[in-house]
Image 1 (tube, rainbow, N blue to C red):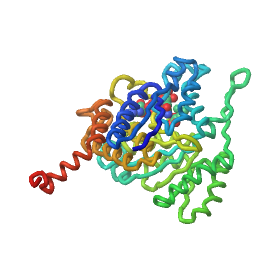
Image 2: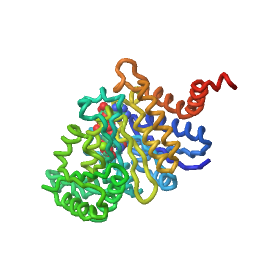
Image 3: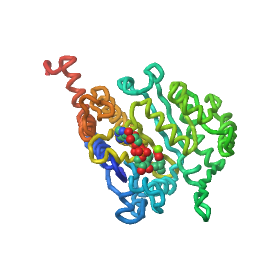
Image 4: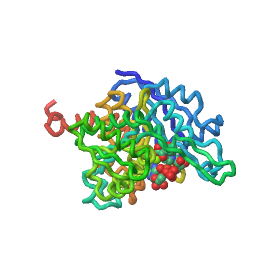
Length: 372
Ligand SMILES: NC(=O)C1=CN([C@@H]2O[C@H](COP(=O)(O)OP(=O)(O)OC[C@H]3O[C@@H](n4cnc5c(N)ncnc54)[C@H](O)[C@@H]3O)[C@@H](O)[C@H]2O)C=CC1
Ligand SMILES: CC(C)CC(=O)C(=O)O
Ligand SMILES: [Mg+2]
């Protein structure tokens, strides 16, 4: 039995709906394994602005610092997206949270599920077998550089800066991951144009001598954007800066079949945070159509981070079971879609119950039930 404090930040739009399913699955894990998860909910994003005027209230940040792990839904609201002059924005809450917690590495696994190959608009033979890990730098680059306007408002700027230590710390993680996988790392940059990208290349090239077993490729981001959907099986670990990683990973979700399938882990020096790669998908809010699997797989990554590997494997197994049995939301199951809640219930039930199910199946298969 373990006892863990998990801060839950549902956020905006579909965030609360998908988070609820992930929490249900964590509760099923706690029940199954007799763990104690202290799950507390805190506002971030637009809902936090509405309640307090601050997209990251002090209380929320303190709860995250105090927790063993953080689970986040998504932030963002059209009332800010459609108001470019808004001074306080939901995204500032998430960016500040990442910075305050020192979450410099965002890890986004992308796989092509056999059972969903037909759901991707991409050709089956191109994507079959895809298994890549994207390491996206998360606390630097253009998202965090100085931004502003000239006095007359006619010129705007967003500065992109990277330091050698900022690049080195995530590059080490990516090399280590590659060493434990298929020993292949691709740095995605724009070194033909950007000075920051040239520094990324320099650092990675030097570091490569420390990881002789890892083959390193260098790819310009425009070419990478094409290669990721043209020939994704060539990639093992992709390492890239903040904005390129944001864009490339949304694109890569087409391989899996839906944005609603891709989880992520953000790690750094302190507490780690887990969130789906998608946003608050406001068009779907309250309709019960959002896919909760990205959030549930983020919870599985959270469990693995807490060294609860058997528990994480069970959640992934339950997700596979849902995929294999067509227990899917409408973007993946057009003919007989399940709701967000139904998919969550199926997975949580499977987690809570799977051992008995396997045991019963085992009994029947070897005839134990007739012997005993
Ligand atoms: N980490 C975060 O909290 C993020 C927040 N955002 C914010 O979210 C808001 C909406 O941004 P968008 O650009 O529309 O991106 P989005 O990721 O919310 O939605 C883009 C599209 O992806 C699909 N999608 C997303 N989540 C899905 C799910 N769970 N199930 C099925 N399909 C899903 C839908 O087709 C949707 O139209 C904005 O305010 C934006 O700033 C965007 C990205 C990340
Ligand atoms: C909403 C942004 C701050 C970031 C984003 O799109 C992401 O982290 O995927
Ligand atoms: Mg994004």
